[in-house]
Length: 592
Image 1 (cartoon, rainbow, N blue to C red):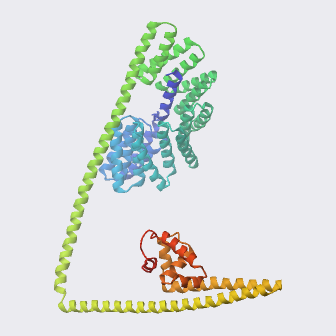
Image 2 (cartoon, helix red, strand yellow):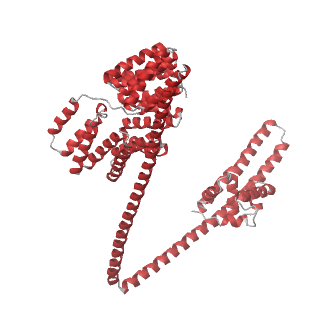
C-alpha cells in the first residue's frame, strides 16, 4: 500500500469522527446561574437539554455531567419526555467516547419509551442514534434499517433539519459500501435542505462529506472547492479546529495534484491552528503530511524529520493510525538508504502498530456482535413480555364478554314469553310470504317485458324484411334508370335506407334488451373483457334463443358469417372445446 493511499484512509476517517472542542467556561457558568433561578424541575431539565442542543455545546467535556443531571431530575419528577431526551444526549456522549454498549443501552431505552408514549421527535432521534452506532460498527444492514425509519419519521414531522442530517448519514453508509454515486446523491440532497433552512453546521458537514467522495475519485480540484465552502462557514462560526482540518485536507488535495509548494503552505497554516489549540493528534497529522510532501519533493532529510515528529506524537498518545504510516515511511526511506539497522527498528514499530490496529478492529467487530446479541435478546424478551400481556388482556376481555353473554341470556330467559315466540314466528312467516309474492310479482313483470321484447323483435324483423325488400326493388329500379343524376339520388336513398335498417333498428333493440336483461352486458364484459360490440349483440340474440335464420333476417348477415361469429364467441367464452350449449350458457348468466 503506497503512502498516499494510507494518508487518504487517515483523512477519510477523520471526516467521520466527532471532534471534542474546548469551549469558554463562561457557557457552563451562565447555565448554572440560570438553573439556580428555575424552580420548576421540568423547566430545569428543558433548559439543560436546550443548552446541549446548541451546536457549539454538543462536544463540551462536561456534556455527560449535564445530561446525567437532566436524567436524574427528570426521573425523580416523573418527567418522561425530559428523561428520554436526556438518555439520547447520554447515548450520543458515550457514542463519541466509543463506548458503544452504553450508547446502545440508552438509545434502546429511549426508543422503547418514545414508542410507548408516542413521542415522534424523540423516537426519530433515538432511531437516528441506533442507526449511527451500527454504522460506526460497519453493520450497514441494521444501520440503514434504523436510519431510514428515522428519516421517515422526520419527513412526517416535516423537520428539514432532521431530514438533512439523516440524508447525510445514509450517504455515509453508501460511501462506506463504495456506492459513491448514491452517496453523492444523498450528500447533495442533504446540502440542499441545509441551505433551505440556513443551518451552517449542516451545510459544512455536507460539503465535507462531498469532498471525501471527490477525494476518493481523485477529483481533487472539485474536492478543494467543497472544502473551501466548508472553510468559509467555519471561519464565520469561529471554529478554529474545523478550519485547521479543512485547510489540512485542502493541502492533501493540492499535494495529490502535484502542487507541492501550495500544499506545504496549507499544511503550515493548519499546523499553526492546531498548535494554538494544542491538539496533538492533528499536529501529528500535519507532521505526517509534511513528511509525504517533502518525500515527493525528494527532500529526504526533511521528510525524515517530519516522519519522526509524527511518530513521536503518535507514540506519546498511542495514536496507532499515526505510528503505523510514519514507521512504514521511515522503514522505506532507510531501506533505500541501506541502513538496515534503522530500517529494522521501524519495521518492528510498524508491526506493533499494525497489530494494535488489527486488535482495535477485532474489538470493534466484537462490539458489533455483542450489541447485535444484546439487541436481539432484548427484542425477544420484549416480544415475549408483549405476548404475555396481550394474552392476559384477551383472557380478561373474553371473560368479560362471556359473563355479559351469560347474564344477558339469563335475563332474556325470563323476559321471553311463549306468546312473543308465536308472534315472532308468525311475523317471520308473513315476511316470507311477502317476499315470495314480491318475487312472483317481479318474475311476472319480467315475463311480460320479455314477451314485449319478443313481439318487438318480431316486429323489427318484419320491418327489416320490408325495408330490405324495398331496398332491393330500389336497386333494381336504379339499374333501369338512365339519368346519372337520378341514379345518384337513388343510390343515396338506398344507402340511407340500409343505414336506417342496420343502425336504428339495432340501437332500438339494444335499448329494449337492456331494460329487460339489465346488467347482462356489464356481467359479460367483466368476465370476458375482450368481447366486441358485435359479439355482445350476438350474445343478446342467443340469450333470447333466436335461430341463425332469425338473426340473419334481423341483421342482414349471411348464415355462414353468423356461424363463424358463434364459433369465435365460443372461443372467447372458453367453451370451444366442450359440449356446452352456447345458448344455454348465455341464458344461465346471472344479471344484476
